[in-house]
Amino acid sequence: MAKNHERIHIDEKNLCSLCVTELESIYEELELTEAELDILSVPRQVFTVHFPVRLSSGTTKMFVGHRVQFNDSRGPSKGGIRFHPNLKVDHVSDLAFLMALKCAVINIPFGGAKGGVVVNPKELTRGELELVTRAYVRAIADFIGPFKDIPAPDVYTDEKVMVWILDEYEQLKGEHVPAMVTGKPVELGGIKARKYSTSLGGVFILESAMGKMGMDKSRARVVVQGFGNVGENAARILHEMGYTVIAVSDSRGGIINGDGLNIHSVITHKRKKGGLEGFEGAERISNDDLLLLDCDVLIPAALSDQIDRNNANHIKAKIVLELANAPTTSEANNMLFDRSIMLIPDVLANAGGVAGSYFEWIQNLSNDYWEQDKVLDRLRKVMIKAFDDIYSLCEEEKCTMKKAAYKIGIKRLLMAEKLRGNI
Ligand code: NAD
Image (cartoon, rainbow, N blue to C red; front, side, top):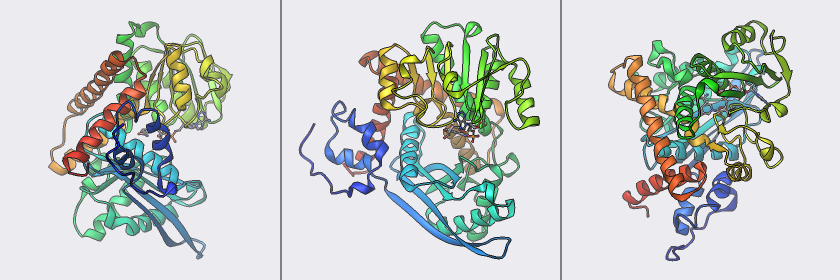
């Protein structure tokens, strides 16, 4: 490691913990200087705002919102806005780092951001939630915009929330600015594929990985953890493509049928009953057991830290496709690698979502709306190019896909910093 840079003084509490853990394992191999490590370990801008909202009861409540812009050396910051009662700025910062890396990994010209409001949306009416969203936008309006920082949906926010964000911002600016937010309804400049681009992007990657491993999809048995936007769409697309999805789950547990589930019927059942329980022709299974099922492809599409040192040695899948963010700990990732299980990391596997957002942003800026085929073709090309780059590096260096993805993403981020004269 080069010693010619002074370590910049950074207060420990401002470091992004995920970056520190993840970068520790590769900074020597990448021969990063301490200055480069500092650039990658701390978010550029962290905004915390407090704002009052008058609830329907007539009382006024103060809310807290955050927005973290991790790195914008490659382009405007990009990242979701979530509503969650336990939202912590440190976690928002970790997620913003992952967004910066993800955009670099698939080589789209965005930096990384994340944000949200500390709120339990289930405790508010739709009208109150709209007031909270609009007040949050007013508080951060000067820091966001189509060439500064572009929000998108995330946990507990949807296209309706994106409309409130757009409308409030446009009222403040006095002009139409559709490219300031992605994940909008089609009628207001959104694109149809955005809702399932995360899952479809992951499926493109899975198909490439299966090809490399000589696996046949007509025989592949798939297990999906999480049946929300990402998990449900992934299960549906794979089912429609001829894969056998044997088990799926949500927060209340899973269902399994070794001969395969009819995912369309599962979706209809979930819409009617509000969950997976009671689906005919399947048995119940716990989320812990679901991860350990004998299958070819395991898709964690729910929460972080699902595969760890306690269960990694019992995973039987040949491929783990991380559609959730950080579902596998670093230690478990290495344990799976030692057992020749291919883990396709989140920064690649679920990057189809931000690729979809990128296409929406381009269309809004150019006012040129593409045919669906063009959107899907561009998505496939972006994802497969990223997979091929990462896979080649893995072959060359005999390393995990995660390490290869981090190396590629970090090199691109640092090149942008270098070109700007920051290194
Ligand atoms: P969502 O809220 O729509 O769905 C989450 C699903 O996980 C729900 O079905 C929920 O019941 C289930 N779940 C919760 N706890 C669970 C548990 N303990 N075991 C099994 N299932 C559980 O969220 P989403 O948009 O589908 O996102 C899922 C994951 O994908 C998150 O990690 C998110 O950060 C990541 N992700 C989403 C996108 C996107 O475009 N939506 C993009 C990139 C990454």
